[in-house]
Image (cartoon, rainbow, N blue to C red):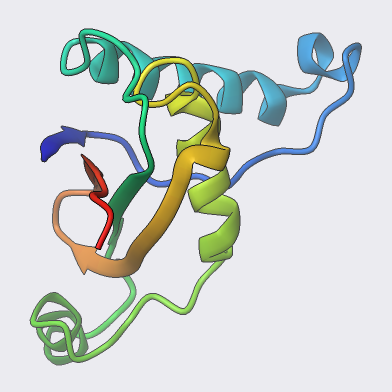
Length: 135
């Protein structure tokens, strides 16, 4: 299993056209986001995994500052989940886009996925990738 952490606030995939990716600020942020994830992944992967792949992704969001101390503590203990935008499937899409040709040749190789959103004092993404063996 290969595990790495990206110290960045989770972001969902952004829809963009070929032209808008150079003009749209959110598209520019998304491209920077994917580049950072890819850069850190390249340090962990000598070459893309060739077989079926499993992945576990934890998305850690900052606790809203306007929350009371009690509510903040509950969130940090995992009693309150981040039911916030972006949707978890869009977050996964961003990670999968970033890891194509680095962790795996194409994201169609992913046959198992575990993902979850958390609150944390330190926003980040924790990514685990492994080759799935036949039963």
